[in-house]
Length: 215
Length: 168
Image (spheres, chains in turn cyan, green):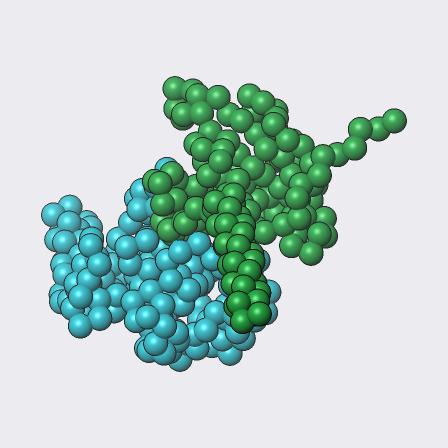
C-alpha cells in the first residue's frame, strides 16, 4: 500500500497548526498591555498530531531530531537551587519540558518587576519549540540564526528552534527560562547579570548538577 | 554691643550658605562629569558559532537609541577561547587598546582588547570590546564607542584597564 497522498500530509500540518484557543497574556495585568504586547497568547492544542508524521506516538510533541523517542524532564529541586544560587527570586512548582516541535512551560511564584511592580505573583513562562526554525528564531532576536530567543516585548513567552535534538530543545528551554526569569524579576533596564548571562548561567548550573534527566 | 552677636550670626550664616552653595555646585559638577546612559533590554537568547560549544547573547538599546550587543561564547578550553580572540584581532581594522580586564575587586580576569572594524558592504563601522574569562570569550559590540564603553562600565564594573607593560 502506498503512503498517504501529499494533500493528506498538508491537511495534517494545517490541523496541527490550527489555533484552538487563547489564554490571557500574563504580561498584561488586568488587560493592560504595553505597546506591541498582545493581550492574549495563541494555544495550539493539536500540535501533538505532528508525532504521527515521524512514525511514533509516544512523544506528544513529535520528534524530528533523529534521536528516537527520547524525552527528558527537569529536576525541580536542581532548577530551584540553581535559581536561588543565581539570586533570581522565583520558585518553580511545575515544569513541562519542551520537545522538538512541541511546547513546554514553567510555572512558579516570584517577584515580578516587569509587569507587577515587584509584587510576588504567579509567573508562567511558556516555551514554543513548534513554530519557528533556527533562522526564524534568529529573526525574532535580530540575528541571522538562533537556537533560542526571549523577545523584549514579552519575556513570558520564549522560543526554541523546532529543528533541535530532544536534549538540545530542553537545554535551550532552560537557557531561555533563565533569560525570561531574570528579566521578569529584574525589570527591563540594564542590570549586571549573574555570571555574565543569566540564561547561560542557569543552563550551565542545571546541566552541571544533572538536572536534565531522561524519562 | 547689641549688634555684635547679630553680625556674628549673619557672618556665620553667610559663610555656611557659601559652603552649602559650593558643596551643591561640586555635586552638580560630579553629576555632569560622569553621566551614565540608561539602557533598555532588547532581547536575549542562545545561538551557535563554529568552534564554540554555545553562545549566549543579549541586546540592549541606550536611551539615545544606540544598540549594544553582548555575546558570551563558550569554548572547550581557555586556549580555544584565546585563539578565537587572536582571530578576532587579526580581522579588525585597528586594535585601539590591548590590556587586561579586571573585576570590581581589581582581580585580573583575562586579556581585554578594544577593536575597530571598518565599514564594509555588510556592516557599518563598529567597535568591539572583547576579553577572555577562562574558557569564555565575552564580546560587546556597538556602532558607538562611547555608548559601548559606558555599557561595559555599567555591566562589568571594573577597575580601570591597564595596558600591557612593554618588555624591557
